[in-house]
Length: 338
Ligand SMILES: Cc1cc2nc3c(=O)[nH]c(=O)nc-3n(C[C@H](O)[C@H](O)[C@H](O)COP(=O)(O)O)c2cc1C
Image (tube, rainbow, N blue to C red; front, side, top):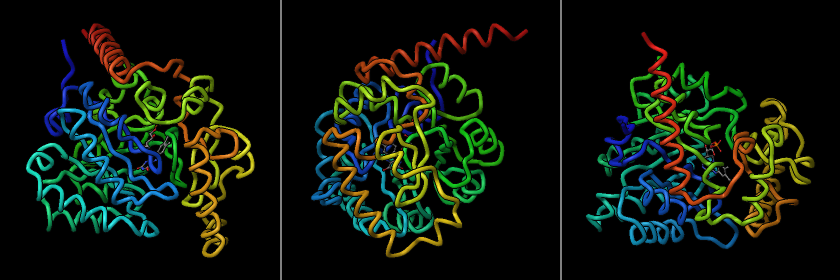
């Protein structure tokens, strides 16, 4: 028995597993390893200090093309403040036009952290064959995306990195999105093992997307201390702080304690503008620190699933173990029927 879902056909992959975008860090080598293991790898939107996001994206696309054979995708964060997003969109159109192999294999763009409408309209006009999935944190957003994009990635509050002010958990979000939306739903936030995949499929999702689980793998290019920090953390070791772009789930350390629990949206609005620019500059620097291995003084983005992660295997081991567990779990569940 093997598990094959509609997502496998849509993306041309063996297993219904996507590795999440984890900008501003690199996930280029991780994406190639995920593709080689039968999943779908995503190249992140990187903008660490000194990095030209467009050049870096182009280099990452060529790296993945050369280091694996299957299909892959890229993330562009499309928030208003993300001034490099239009140039990244143009890059994808150009590369897919110039190179038929890139056109064939760079199958999907994941848009996130902003309004999906402008990029959806842009690609409908300029490159309608590129699949566009958008990341949404509530049913309200999922229903808006349903009419615009090819798929919906529903990401719940237990996940790592930026979160919404609404704090909806994955189980609630996926269940209602599947009920109310027509487009395929990918479940995201909190998944780390095969039982998780089985439960996502039972909720009606066509697959899962994972960030935290894939950081703790041999091939992920994050610093070894970041990976170790995840492995030794428990489910209660993360907190949601006020980041420059909104709430963000981090592992508790000196940086997280200093940034405190999240403010409400109203309080955040009151301190916006110039103060925010300072916060953004400070954030950009501290991301660089973390990428270099300072897991004390910078933001260590991580989901609550760290509690269920206790090793650093290869990507292939993670994916194959998860699929085996999911299959066993689904078999067990079907034995409950009748
Ligand atoms: C280190 C890190 C960086 C992230 N950066 C991005 C990003 O640039 N764009 C994005 O759409 N999501 C980003 N996310 C969120 C992930 O794409 C994904 O939604 C999340 O990791 C899922 O939850 P999980 O960590 O429990 O698997 C980030 C998450 C982490 C842990």
